[in-house]
Amino acid sequence: MIARLRGKIIEAFPNRLVVDCHGVGYEAIIPLSTYDKLHPTEGADVDLRTHLQIRENAHTLYGFATEEERDVFHLLIDRVSGIGPAIAISILSGMPVNSFKTAVVAGDSVLLSKCKGIGKKTAERIILELKDKVGVTDTWQDAASGQVSSQAADAELALIALGYKQVDSRKAVRAILDKTPASTTEELIRGALRSLQS
Image (cartoon, rainbow, N blue to C red; front, top):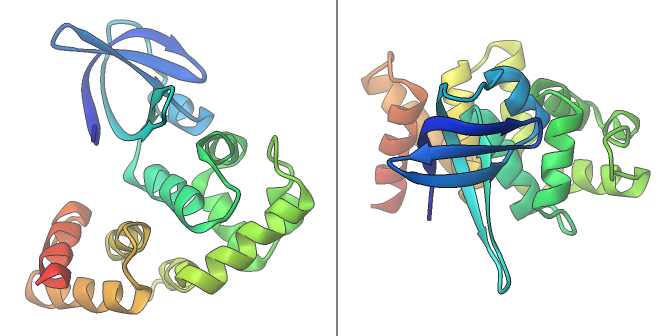
């Protein structure tokens, strides 16, 4: 699995980048949100979080500027029936991550259905399945109200995207924060994974 790419941009388009990593050019499909954050130009250094989709007839690499974008992408393709990578990329291209979170928390299917390829029924299914199956909205609401730090919320969402329950994820993250309050998101994720797998 290719989880991250760091290298120089060979080609830059609003929907894809080609990144040179030690002489090998990797093409990554990106959402517009990533393009807007990076403002990529040919020859510039880039660091992408990635997801590799392997199918019988193709290997497709998806790239993201932030962990948060990749986590939302994983939530959509793993937790919502009928949502594949193309629609997940379309959602991330159609609205910022925070707007997506707000729409799910508020149950705003009209806002979600403004994204290309998302009808009203699909938008309603996204809201229903993310709320019912994952408990993601609790984390988003707690982060918005300041009950948990953004690092803790991002770590929880990453663990949820990996298939852990929200309750277990929060407990593991809080245990690490109690020991080392200044932990980064990546440190929280690594430490929580160790405790959840033991």
